[in-house]
Length: 274
Image 1 (tube, helix red, strand yellow):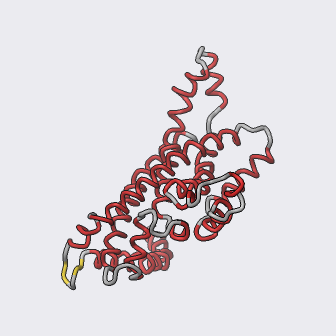
Image 2 (image 1 turned 90 degrees about the horizontal axis):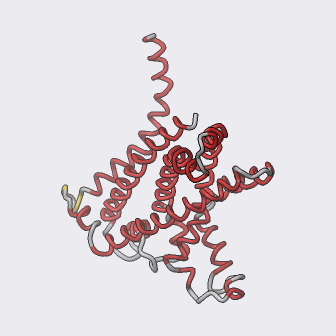
């Protein structure tokens, strides 16, 4: 038994070394830089990252992510329910396949797609009479982010909705429960962990997005990822690299809180739906 365990750890050494090199070294450098100011250990970078324009950018990212997460969760859940309850197998497979593709479609191509469609000189913007520049605002960015948030929610909720047993509805009906009672006391308690987990996942996805917002709005909408890029590249401020590292550390803390909420909910949901 001891020898087999030793062989198991030996086989995991290359993987652990890879993770230590790819994730461990950058994390150590990030933390060290965030707590260093003018060559000395200091909390000045972290304090400055939570003040002024940096705090506004962090609040803007949190607000944007929250709106995208809530709207994407509602719309994605309804779309997933429509797909799961559909009698057309081909439609179901097509929507799920498209959701898998669109959930990973982002960055500059997504920004170009929307700019070419609804931008100032877009194909459709002139036909529907959209005000000039309406796409390059906070709510325009929300609409663009929903393009990959809704499909991601469909992928999260479809397995959970599939896990609802028909026998549960039949048992509720035989007990005299109405459709409202079934959803209120049976279905929703079972689906709630998956729904909350989806909201958290959408929040984290929108919170960490950079390329799409950079290509679309630039500095018009204050976001923490754009602030980090400006500080690192010196486009606006020179010598603020450690501030960028402090902002990155703030984002890691937020991402850690997101994952700390998501993983227990995911485990609870999978236990209910076995």
